[in-house]
Length: 57
View 1 (tube, rainbow, N blue to C red):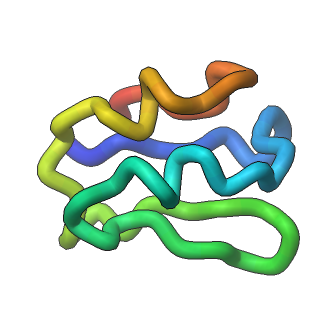
View 2 (tube, rainbow, N blue to C red):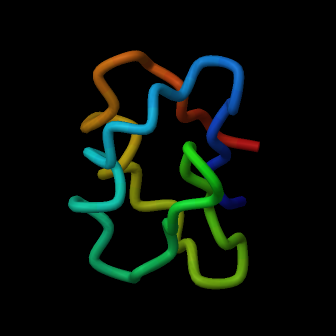
């Protein structure tokens, strides 16, 4: 299962994007989103998020 980013919590800092080795996270307007096809569910982005906006689907 891929990780998801809660847009209501995301502050758009980009910390998650910088930790994703699979380029599964990309900016979408002023927030970030996970591409479920590219996500390997490694969890690196979840631990990098300063506001806990990322979780498993």
